Length: 178
Image 1: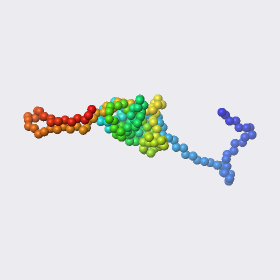
Image 2: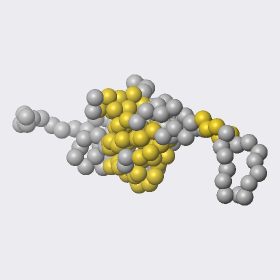
Image 3: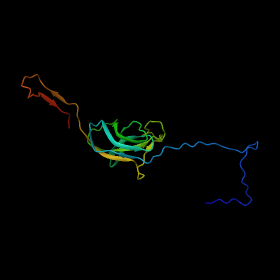
Image 4: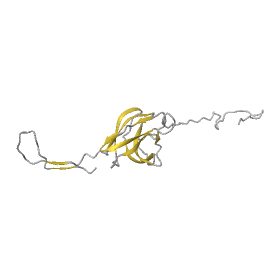
């Protein structure tokens, strides 16, 4: 569409009552960019309470969230990192709010703190925080299998004994359920 003013159209600036030109000032706040971002996570062993994201690159400050795998897509949020600076962060440890009980696939997803409040508003419908975009324009996410290894509580009981120091007799061992 192209507008063509009539030939007798006169383009005059808007003026105030005193004849001065009318002016206005506007401030436009742009949201931080969502791209480019990337994330990497490797299969790992964990006690189920903590996982490590190998690396994440964010275009602006943001977060990494660990999601359960629900039929091949990110599901419920298991844990969220502290606020990460723009750029690359390596070996990001996430303490899970919902610990893993069994070995399972998970998704690590990068998010940008678009409202700048430093708080991950990932489940808040009013939050501007959004999924960061990878090089292909899709969500910046990675998947890995976390093998849960239960290491506690383990109880080992040994009674007082005499010997030559080469043999110890263990009275009982209690291991965590598999």
